[in-house]
Image 1 (cartoon, rainbow, N blue to C red):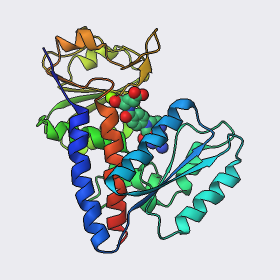
Image 2: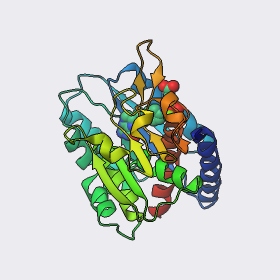
Image 3: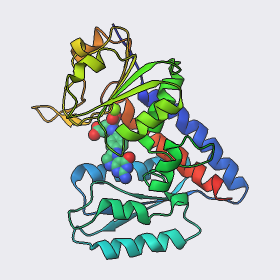
Length: 283
Ligand SMILES: Nc1nc2c(c(=O)[nH]1)N[C@@H](CN(C=O)c1ccc(C(=O)N[C@@H](CCC(=O)O)C(=O)O)cc1)CN2
Ligand SMILES: [Mg+2]
């Protein structure tokens, strides 16, 4: 039976460390500040943004939510970002995803100053990640938080067979780079992969980020593997569930993250951690 990785508890621990860093910076006259921009936004996005704001407040990070109407033009959003890029009191800028159809997400990503890109999505930061640069730079919060979880749980990374299911810019691609940089042998599988489960069954570390509820079953998992479920799906009853079929995975995996209470809390805690890092690096 798998050991459940308690993301909530590890996130709480990270938040305590982040709060101490905030107190240090404040004592030196720096108040870390995050701005979250939301354009229109579904109910879920509104909740995530509110949660980020509350968590920042608790840790002592200044945070501002900029709410823009759903019909905001790309030019208007670019102009708002430009204002925050120039404002030296702001250290971290995040544009909540998804954005309305009239806005090109990639153009928005490129408009945020790489030094304030708390999501780590800017091509300059992605380039640093993929070249394993020995520099300070932000990394996408969900995969960075997963690395924190793996290390906290003492999961062996060097030489491990890691399989990432999904190739998104937010999770799959940066996750693969982080695992590779840590010394794992990394395979990325996706919707066009032939015989996907031939790969997943070889994985010592399996990270699943597809948005397809219960795609991965216990029979797709190597006995004893560490399984990280990034899914935030809804079952037939509308209940939040993961990309991994928890019940069948539980009897095969060595370690397993639940949904909710696994990766999600670590994403928010990592966002806080990285806001403080950006403030520190800006000194
Ligand atoms: N600009 C960004 N947009 C989005 C990101 C992102 O990293 N940057 N990620 C997701 C949404 N997201 C953060 O923005 C996020 C969603 C959910 C959670 C979370 O804590 N989930 C809880 C469960 C919550 C519930 O009950 O509904 C959990 O897993 O325990 C954290 C972050 C898309 N957009
Ligand atoms: Mg979770």
